[in-house]
Image (cartoon, rainbow, N blue to C red; front, side, top):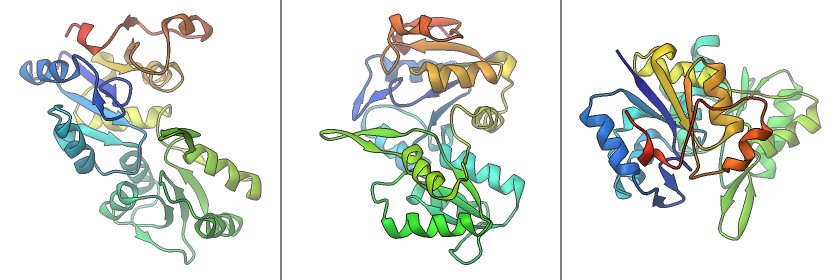
Length: 252
């Protein structure tokens, strides 16, 4: 294999419910050249099938097997650590389906893990249960460290913010599996049988996408269609291999 691409979703291929100009054509170029690729997202709410349907409606022809979520990465990690285990999960179908698919039982009775993911319906009851279970010895895992996400009218709390609440109550910090953890990158590379030496990570955030690519040994490309602006790059102690206006300007 000569090359492969990993890429973030939001800020690279889409912005909210709008495809970024040139993104559908970039995906088609990869498919036409038969270059392996995987779309990564820290969004654990949806299954790859859900993401596929959403992207298809936006004109992006991405098979569900080419979508890798932080929920899938978390499920793979737990299955490798403790196969067929028990977990108390806070999240939506993307997380619960991923855990079920690796043989995990979801329970609030003596679970081995408390697993925190993304949802629009964080409840005081479920957070209180998580705190009691972590206090009782359950290991604390979170799908990603993002503290906020976009919503109508402004930001809403995300996984990292709720994890901080549980940590404040228990004194136990979670282990985050999603970006920028290189575990997610390596798991995605295995899914497409690619090697880091020949692979490129495309992202819009220096603090998640680019650093995770660098720490995983990938070539990195920052696109300027999302979070990190060009004049902010020099503030970081590391830099991408290449900066492009968008995926439309990336040569393959």
